[in-house]
Amino acid sequence: MNIAVCVKQIPDPAVPGELDPETKTLKREGKLILDDSDAYGVEMALQLADTAGGGDVTLVSMAPNDEVSGLRTALAMGAAKAVLVSDPALQGSDSLSTAKVLAKAIERAGEVDLVITATESTDGYTGTIPAQIAELLGWPSLTFAKQIEVGDGKVKIQRQTEAGYDIVEAPLPAVVSVTAGVVEPRYPSFKGIMAAKNKPVDQAKTADLGLADDQVGWKGARQKIESIEAAPERQAGEKIEDEGDAHERVVAFLEQLKVI
Amino acid sequence: MTLPKVWVYAEAADGKPTSATLELLTKAREIGDTVEAVYAGADADAVAPQLGEYGATKVHAVDHGSSLSGVVGGALLAQLVADQQPDLIVFAQSYDGRDALGRLSVRLDRPVLTNGNAIDVNGDTVTVSTAVFGGNTIVTTAFEGEKPYLAGIRPKSFAAEPGGGGAAEVAKVDNVDVGRAGEAQVLDHHVEEQEGPKLEDAEVVVSGGRGLGSAEAYEPLVEELAKVLKGASGASRAIVDAGWVPYSKQVGQTGKTVKPKVYIAIGISGATQHMVGMKGSDNIIAINKDPEAPIFGVADLGIVGDASKVVPKLIEALKAKS
Image (cartoon, rainbow over all chains, first blue to last red; front, side, top):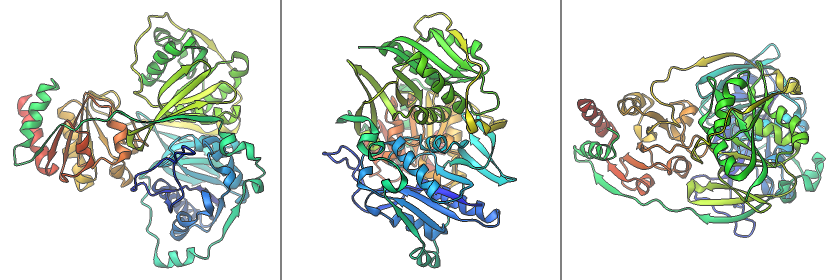
């Protein structure tokens, strides 16, 4: 079974983000890392391919400046290869443009039975890309999976709902988005890290995918950032050190608020 | 300023519109001359009275059968748009709302603005505002290009207030072209027993983070305190990622937004990712070992201490009072 996993390479979330005053988009010039949210999808794909008794796990990514450091992390975990789309024309791309690029990149990855994505990226978090990719490919989408099984040409998931979960099934090929915590991502081994350096990364430009420049980037986004403002700040209140009786202060506060 | 026609993508559970749907209808009344709902579900007649009470004059409905509701809802919207010409369609940033929004944006080839917490109409310009960087920055973006504009709004962005309208007229649609997407079939529903109120609706929310030390500490500290206060339990992304609790409990940017009367953060440092989901709470209490934790910067009451010591005493004191 061949699986494509969409992965995003993002600025380190531990470092405070910054907007470019000129373009009004998130600054992404620095080193990028594999989005934590995507490590679950990579791990899930590796396990499913293993259970199925073989097949390739291919990473699909769109990133500025031919960035590969995040891809190398996922390749070190065990993915076989990657398709990376990098093109200055993609700057300013919104979720729909991004989905168009990823859908084309998935087609470029060859015969694929299953596409796995995270539910949303950590930095952009529009949360619509899994459904958009599925619609572009003309495939079913099974979103918010907390468990996945594949067999008999079908994929079956436990789909997170407000009340609990639903069992949802669809014939392959299909797109599945996985929630965080669904599996425990492996740490790349030293051998994996060494092997990752020589794994193939197929680098493509927008034109290689058959997409016109006005379908992506600023033109494709069809939106304009009007303003960026500081939100009203919340003031810190009282802060006390616990000396064995801090719970009493909490009780008093809750009483004052008439919660108890 | 108003738009001629605003549509709300409606969702319901147990025959009742979700609170996010009612919030969107309330907002739609303010920015639209005509407000209509679009709904995928077999029980449109049951939800129509309340949709009407909150502002919808009509509900376009389709029975999604055993297919996913958002997938069928997106296809229904795509089918109706050419004829009905709505100016703006708003969706709750929910599980099914995101399915519908994503699918529709491709079918219509329209961009989406998502995670909004405000939507404004100014002449011909429609903007959506989104909180970024943990809610310390607000980015306001205007739609360009052809209508309808498509917006995803985070639940709890607006208050829900009835407008006093009568039941919405139900316009049922029988045939919707869902394509292969309809092959995803719901085989079974599992309802997880939940004590107390829902996370989004609770007056008190108690959340736990990495500072709890272990997955085993969540139940006796976080869930127990929530139970004693008749509230709901939540979590930071860190412990959801670690697999301690399910994604449905996650409060934050990539999780839920909550605005309870009291939010109690236990062992949560206050990463920007978390703050954006709870900063709008009326009152915040934080319990954390690290005096420098950013969560204290937004807390009305901060306790610098060990959660495993403070919280059991707190639970005991509260139990003694009730």
